[in-house]
Image (cartoon, helix red, strand yellow):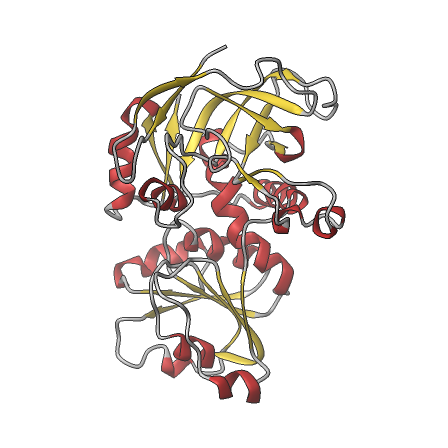
Length: 335
C-alpha cells in the first residue's frame, strides 16, 4: 500500500506531492494503521521545514496533530478496533524500558521517536504508529478541533496540571496558538487568569476565553507593575522577553514555565530566584497518560481551539499563512 503525502526536499522548500511504501510491508504486531482525516499545522512544523533545530531529515513529511480512523491493527494491539476514531501527537515511540518509560513519563525518554522526525508524518493519507501512542478521541470532540489538542493542547495542559490548584493566580504570556488554549485550561482549573499580550485588540477575546484580567505588554511598565502577583506564569510565545520582569511578577515560591522556544537563551537575574525561592522550568508535551487525561478534560469542559481549515492540497498556502502570523489560531488540514 503506497501512502500519498506532501514532502519538502530541503530547508524552506515548498511541499510537493510524495508517495512512499511503509516499511516493513507487513504491519508490525505493535502498530496501528490510520487513515488520516485531519492534521493540524503546528509551529514546530515550521521549525522542522526550515531545519531550525538542525536535525530535520529530508524528504520531510511534517505533521503530528493527527486525527483519523483505524484501518488495520497489529496482532498485539488490543485496545482499539477497526473503524475507531483516534489521534496521534508529537511522540510516536519510546524505548519502553528506561526509568522514565517505566514510571509513565515516556515523553522524557532519551530514545523517544517523533511522529514526523523519525518517520513520515501526518500531511498524508495514512500513517502507521506504535499503538501505545495512539489515543481514542472522545465522541464530543469534533475532529477538526481535536487535532490541535494532540500537541498544542497537551503542551500547555501538562505543566498546568502538574502545578496549578484552584484559586491560584495564573498568568498566560501570549494569546496565540498555545496561549488561547492555556487561558481556557487555567480558567477551567478554577484559577484567576491574566492574559499578557502585545496586541491590545485581543483583550475582548482573552476575556471571552476565560481571562479575568488583561495586560498590554506594549505599555511601558505594565509587566513591572504586576510584581509578585502570580503563583504561576506560563510563557507560550516564541520570542525573547525581558525575563527578569516576568520572574519578578511571580510571587515568592511561584513558578515561571517556558513552553514557547525563544530564539535566544533565557537569561535571568539571580537574586529574585534565591531570595524569593522562585523557580523556572520548561515543559515538553505530556506523557501518553497525560494526553488521554487532557482529551477527556477538554471534552468535559468544552475546551476547544479556534481553528481554520484548509484542504490538504492547499498545504503550502496554509503553511505560509501560519508562517506570516495570520492564523487565528490553529490551522488544520483536511483530507
